Image 1: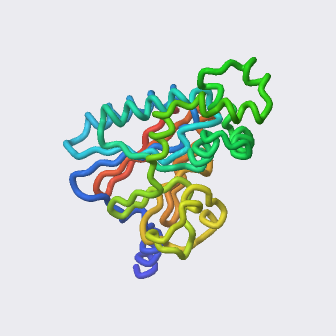
Image 2: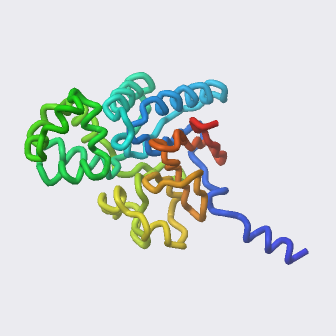
Image 3: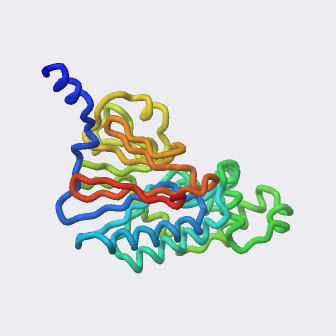
Length: 255
C-alpha cells in the first residue's frame, strides 16, 4: 500500500496543480509564422469554444513569431490587429522574429540581411512588392526599400508587444527563461531567443512556463514547461492552449 502511494505521489506533475484566477479563461496561441489562413481558422475555433463554455473573462495571448516563413505575414498582422479591436482583451508577446522585423524596418542593411536569412523574405513579399522587383534589388537597395514597404501602423503595433505575461500559476513567454534567474530579472534577449539552456534544465520554475519558439510535432508537457509551437508554417497545425481554473485543454487547426 505504501509503495503504491509513493508511486502515485511521484507521478504528480507541477503542471497538474497549476491554476489561473477564478472567473478568467485564457487562450494562448503558438507561433503563427505567416499562416493567416490557419490563424483565422483557429480564432474561429476559439470563439466557438469560448461560446460553448460558462461565462468568464476571456483573454487571448499570442506567444510571438506571428511573422516570417509562411506566405502572408502582412495578413497575419492585420488579423491580429483586428482581433485586438474585436475581442479587446488580446495581448501579444515579442518573438525573436518580431525583434528582427523591427530592426529591418529601420533600413539597417545588416539587419535586413539577417531578416532575409531567417524567413523575412516571405514577409517582405507579403507586402506591396513583386517577386520580380525583389529579385532585381541588391541588399543595399532592398534595405532602402523596406522602410517604404512596412506600414507604420504595423511597426507601431509590433513595437508595443510585451516580453512576458504572468497570470496565476502560469508565465507566458516566447522562447523560454534563463534557468536560475527570477522571472522579474529575466533579460529580453533570453525571453525571445533562448533554447537549449532552457529546454535541457531539469529544475522546477516558479511558474509553469508556456512557450513557443521550439517546434515539436505535438504539445510538450514536462515538469513546469508547456511548449505549443507545432510548426504551423509547414505542418498546417497551429495550436492554442486553453486554461480555466485548474483545467487545461488544447485547440488546433489539424483536428
